[in-house]
Length: 267
Image (cartoon, rainbow, N blue to C red; front, top):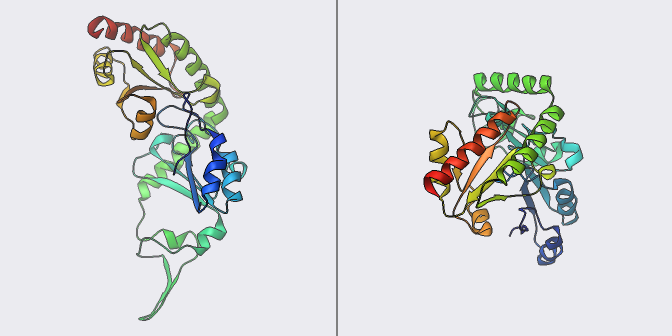
């Protein structure tokens, strides 16, 4: 089951009562920020609703953590996951936060050194948290790099990054409106992180990305691992422009110039 979205790509919370009426809800999972549209989802409300159903709330914060302060207590979630590489850190590393009482009840999913307290031929007891979930030798270099990346972002300040991105997104949406046939997907700038997905009438997103690449502008084209969303939007794919702390307005201007070139070459 899923929560439907409206034409802006925002969750339709008015559908929750119908879902609750179906019963048997054990886990509610949602991303805090959409990697496809940049939508900032109302996870606090979802978590409260999930708990009313007797369910746990699992949050994917991989796309949110680099762009805004993530407070698990304020969100009210039970589990939250994020990745290192989205936070300017190494690939292959991440973090999972969970409520202690739930983690205590869970059995390990990996077996190896350090995750046991004792072993006999007929029984095993697990180590205390967090070690029972950290079997074997960890990715030490990646963990060190992950920590350095977090320190770097904290030094800059996530509120400053969020404010910078909102300004860039608002500017980008205004500039992209100049392109004939361009349709931007997602909510207004104040309700999204640094992502703008769009298509141009009559031109495939992969072709848009190719011409932009020739112009020295890097974007992503495809379904962004969200094919059901593409179906809901009525498109095969979108072109996605992403902004971050190092993006400046001049680069958005170059994107717009590149899109005019796309229209000239392919339109």
